[in-house]
Length: 346
Image (tube, rainbow, N blue to C red):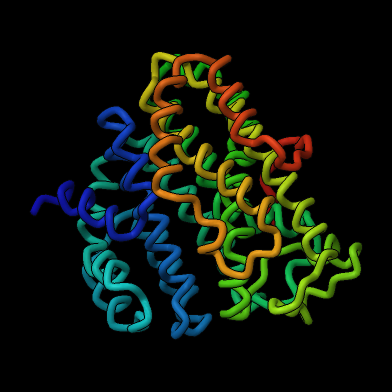
């Protein structure tokens, strides 16, 4: 199996969504974005491991960032991390870590601009993960600003990286780089907030909550003592506000997508499929604010297929896409969102 064949194979195991969307990208962009996703997945696997001590997570993260930036002995890194990784990690995650050298060989075959974009993303993501290590609590994050910052480190920076990769790929996309950069973080946050809201109860079961506690406190809800078995209209009211904020970010994501020239249908499809599925998820969340498990608001396979067909049909038309977005989000609360900036370094 070649390195590229392995990359295509493992994408199927570590991400259902990106395994669908990345093949829509034109070559060689699909290869680069697929590799970038796997780099982020390795960093995320380190951060999520329940058995690794904080100092070990930090050390492995720093070593991985150095390998992405400069190269080095990735085989020893893979062996040592693989041995330390929890048995609770998925088989696909263990396989990915064992094959880190394959992933990095593709990374270092990319051009200088691509490598810089990917290394910057992994470094910022790893730094952010270190910042949030040990802060997981059922009390939630302090406020919306803290939630924005968390979303930046785990998703907004990915939006920035993808923008750099798209602009490196095509000069006519690069012509819109200033406008794309302004919206890139918002695109990532919209997708991440949708996942956070969908996974509220699963996150709580492992002792984490990424909701802004001031917003819930304003409705008389104490996240620390939240009872998932009880009906809580006040909680649902605050949840509705966050659905509206996520929807506003996804509206920005649509504007981002429309800045990609229509001739780049594959790149538009890559954006639109993720955006469409997120909008439908928000719609289900809004209709079932009393849900108690992510499976209750998971969109059906039929809905996914319909989203793909409709997005593909309208990919070349701004009017069609705006209409499709409006219809899909009927009844979903909406807040106009000023695209966020990256957090300033401490």
